[in-house]
Structure formats: C-alpha cells, structure tokens
Image 1 (cartoon, rainbow over the protein chains, first blue to last red):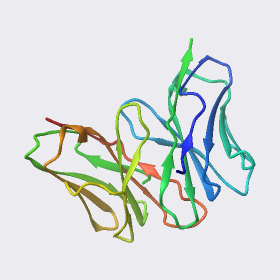
Image 2: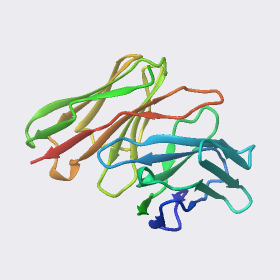
Image 3: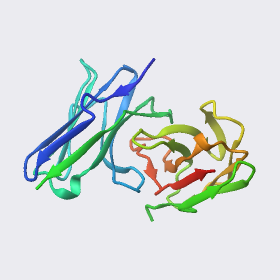
Image 4: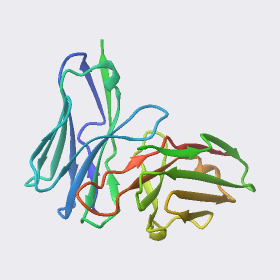
Length: 113
Length: 114
C-alpha cells in the first residue's frame, strides 16, 4: 500500500546543534508535503510545506528538502532549542483537489541541555 | 482568525452514552476533517467534508456519525462506543484547492470510553 514513513522514531540532539528529521514516502503521485510539530496535549502545528515542483524551501530556522527521485523528505532545524522538543510528522497529499492527507509515523525530537 | 476550536477538551463516556464533539473555524475554509489519534501514533483520517458534503469516509464504524451543519461547524456524534475508541479526536480545516492546502488543526478532544 501507499504509505509515508520515517527512518528514525526518536532523535536526541544537543541544544544549539542542528536537527535532521527524515521521511520516506511511496506514493509517486504525491505533490504536496507538510511537516507538522505536535507538542504533548496539543494538535499538530504546521511548520512548513513544499510542493513537488520544488526541491527546497526555507522558513525561520527550518528547511525542508524534497528528493523526488528517491521519494525522500527531510526537515532541518537549525540551532535546535528546548522548545523544539516535540513529535514531528510529515504528511503527504496527492492531487491539487485531493483532501486525503497521509501522515508518517512520527519522530520524537528530544533536545538535551 | 486562524484558529480551529474544539469542544469539549475532555470527555468521559460510557458505552451506552450518546455524546457529540464540536469543531468550529472562521477562516472560510470549505474542507473540514476529523482525525483519530491514538497515543504515540500519527493522526488517522476518519472523515472529510467538502462544501458541507461528506466526501471521504475512511470505513469508519457507524457508531461515529459526522455532521456539517454549515461551512464553519463540524460535529462528530458518538453512540455506543467501545473502550478501544478512546483516543484524541482532532478536527482540521483547509482550503479546498489552490496553492496552499495546509490543514489547520484544533487542540483535539481527549475521549475516554469506559
């Protein structure tokens, strides 16, 4: 079946270091991807998105890279802070009018002092 | 206003009870979603409404009954639930088409079925 997955279920980084969270997807028709951050007791919060016609997109301290050849998505967080500790999900959607977002299993990021 | 609100925040119900979850957004989004999220798992899509009409039902048991009274409101009616239905129920909304399809999520309703 089509799925979105992550290579690492947990990631621990030192405060101030850069974090890289990976995501693999298998639906070649997916053309829109979102990274979400979910803190304990809260709903997912949008971080950054990217469309399939792009390879890279940057936000504030975050960068998303898309490699369509190997169906791989990554989220880079620069100068990781304690407030970045959360579970990060990638989600994919196929088609401009599709509404079916499929979430990956998630990566828990822990920032060490 | 870029907020999706959900009520109640917490709900405890017995297996014979009938209850409803409510969701509201005022961003003019014409797509609204219900997700179920178990602990340490990603959100799983349950239902999608487009222009107030049910467009996707991911084979959800009939004890869950969604309703979209208008473009701003989304309800989830619950009846005869099972303990395994205990989860965080998330509502989300998005534009239906166009460049930005990002979903905005509410904080969720934590449901416990006894």
